[in-house]
Length: 454
Ligand SMILES: Nc1nc2c(ncn2[C@@H]2O[C@H](COP(=O)(O)OP(=O)(O)OP(=O)(O)O)[C@@H](O)[C@H]2O)c(=O)[nH]1
Image (cartoon, rainbow, N blue to C red):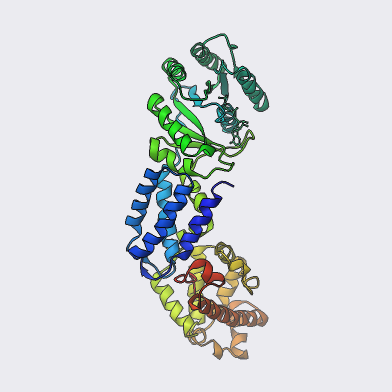
């Protein structure tokens, strides 16, 4: 998949960050030096890299590393946010004509994937119950008209052609009339590609624009060409005022640079990304999803988000102390259960932590959400004293609790056993978290990471 090189490099950078308290300038500088190299290697425009790094630095230095976080997590979060912004922030949707049809002109250099993308876009629109008309305005490449017709047949979309003896402007104009008559609500104009940007090509495109006033002018650029794609986009944008860019061949061996720099350099949003040759391999471009894909840390980001929204720092500190002193009680257990409920299913959460699912004993430590309510009923039937001192729970007390909570004694016994196991497990966790570096969880998450609920 694309971005692999970039992803690996970034992950290495963030894994190296250490320390607690506030992020120091030295730490941040060191990490950012690597991020900078990773981005340059991925063929991101150097000016974009420079500004990006400056922004991250401004955000990161002095940031508090909260108890449940590692420095790496803090930086990942900032980088992710800025990367999303860099690529346009929010998803840019296609413009829509007040009065149909919506006219979309497709432009691009030869071989960029323009004709293929036109077919893919038509397919995407069909899926949304639209009735696109494909228009063959590339009269210079003999096979271009045929190629569009084949694509049209494949998706059962009408293709408007007037052969190769009529001017593209004339064809576009007639196509519009045809669409109005036939109830096509989108008109996709496939224009001619050239090997290089030349005046003649631009003039022709400008004439089509003047004649049919497209609502969208989309430029298809080949993501594999990296900065060249960005330069092409810049030249086209200057002449044609593009409304959006489509990145093709993002599935290939791209280094990702184009996806990152296009918006920053041209000011023009990426609206779609093509990820393969197949007709349905076109997706709306989501800057946030792309950012987390580039970082390769989607799960980690979800975890950070959840931790941010539901973990009470003070409580986490208190719990940690109790765990260390083996003072964890059923009262705390209840409280932790409440916290967990806010976070979502426990096993799902554990799966998000790298290395966690591979840990010994983890398989037996699954909590069934449905059983949770019964478990809570047992704990709630205990007296305050029993909750605080589980060792008081002798046979007669267990019997009373079973009756009070509507469970069998076996179930009460099982829970108490589970509780003891959990206590042991959590002690183990806290040992691992504070222990020496390099192994398992700690190696993955960094020194400062604390298990969110223990
Ligand atoms: N892997 C991959 N290949 C693609 C993608 N999009 C297009 N291609 C391939 O790129 C080649 C060129 O695509 P075309 O659509 O013919 O290119 P074009 O820009 O229309 O070319 P001209 O009509 O000559 O201007 C074809 O072999 C496509 O199958 C993509 O997203 N991924």
